[in-house]
Amino acid sequence: MQQSKHLKLKGVHCHIGSQIEGTEAFIETAKIVLRWLKEQGIQVELLNLGGGFGIKYVEGDEVSLSKVVLKILQTQ
Image (cartoon, rainbow, N blue to C red; front, top):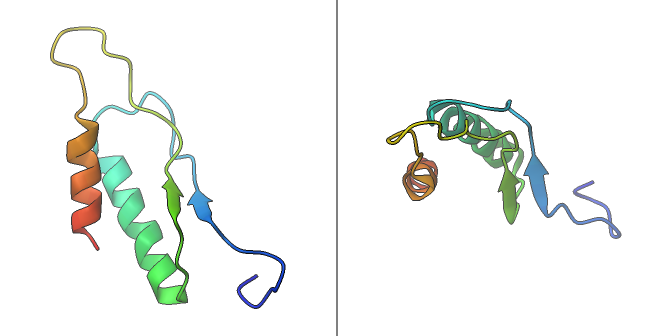
């Protein structure tokens, strides 16, 4: 695909599960995917980790998405 004149890879998607509690699975998956892309010399504009965080059932269960994104960006 990298040599194609007609296709341009815009992003990568993977689905790591649903109702995930905690942030570590997303961060580790991002590290693995980003490392692989770098090794292959592939640049993308979008990384979609799919899945989703568990539902907030009680106060204090919420996940800070900005903290997750910051940790992922720090792996670069």
